[in-house]
Amino acid sequence: MAEGWTRHLRGEFINVWSAGTEKRGLDPRAIRVMAQAGVDIFGHYSKLVEELEAIDFDYVITLCDHSRGTCPFFPGHARTLHMGFDDPPALARDETQEEGRLRHYRRVRDEIRAFVERLPDALPSLAIRS
Image 1: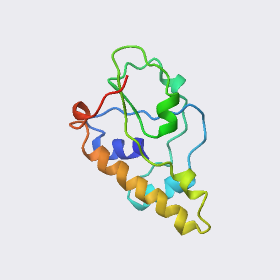
Image 2: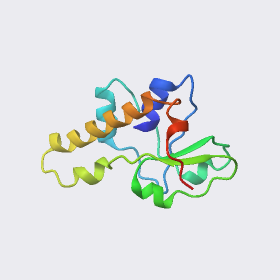
Image 3: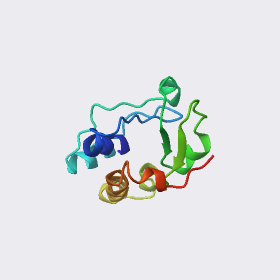
Image 4: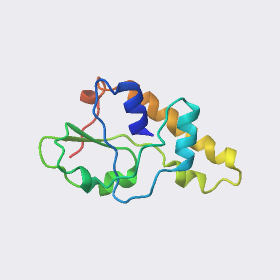
């Protein structure tokens, strides 16, 4: 969702790539709630961090606590920071109804949008972690 919002809202200013420490595929609920907000992420695909090692990043932003602890070192001058968002699939597991599951996805979608709307200006003011 973060890559989708960044491409949609800030694509003319920011080159963005999203990756993880394991491939999980594209989440159908994420596709659905992003489409509801007018952003098509259907063509996105799951990438491993290792697939992006050749890119000289300015920033590496982790978005969930799991990725914060497992994100590898990126060579070069990349500044690494963490923005903690809830993990919608983890929250959705406890819901018995699909609408309840989607509610978690929509909330996180909207929180990510608010973060992306502040980019790139917000980056220097965020706490940088080592």
